[in-house]
Length: 294
Image (cartoon, rainbow, N blue to C red; front, side, top):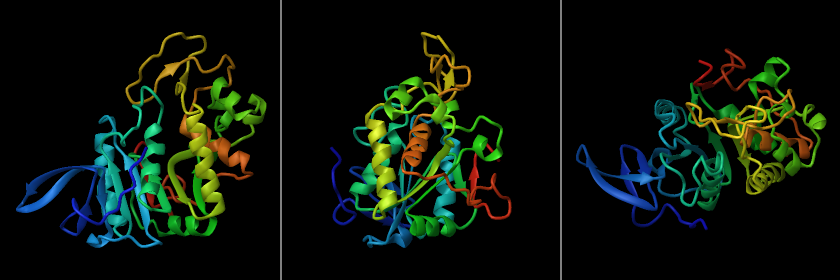
């Protein structure tokens, strides 16, 4: 059960234009200022202590020190380019969240849930590998207008023929979705490294509800790389593992939260959005840089 808590009251420290607060507080002195090492780190816009109904929040996790350099870079970029938003950063798993080895990418669901429990309704999830290099105002405007933002996965955008849900979905997840492999091969895969939601908008609320439901039903679990018939899990250098996903030769692996989110959009009659927000989509209009893409 998530605790509902506010930013007011004890345990709030203000230093150098930021407010950091947590359910786990460890006071330390840094350059003569009292600050807190926390889980999560919550940074307010311009040192404000109170939220407003229109406040926006960016949520991200850097768990198990898998991507420490990326997470540090992303935080610095958000603090520079997104100072008008609240920012919630997790350097460890959210309270009650299972570890990656137990439930794939559960930390995304738990972190967004906690932001919702804190009272935020306009939420932007950013993977540790996503860094703003310019103003995110167009993305927030998209969320305001449509109620949501989810973009295409690279392979679908570039048209290499491997960008469909059917290429990146386990047999077990298809059974949860209740669709055939052939139908899934007609569904575009999405990028879940950037997910914008307005929980007061019917579509934003429906996407969030559907994504959570598929997590609870186990649809996130599976191996990133398909090794047909393998009875053992092969760890990868990152959080991605190899193992049996499907005997279908068209299946490259399972994309966990991305596969589930792609099906959620499909079930709602929606397509991913191609707005040129990423620098890999457009060098002219992109303002979000993917660490691996450069």
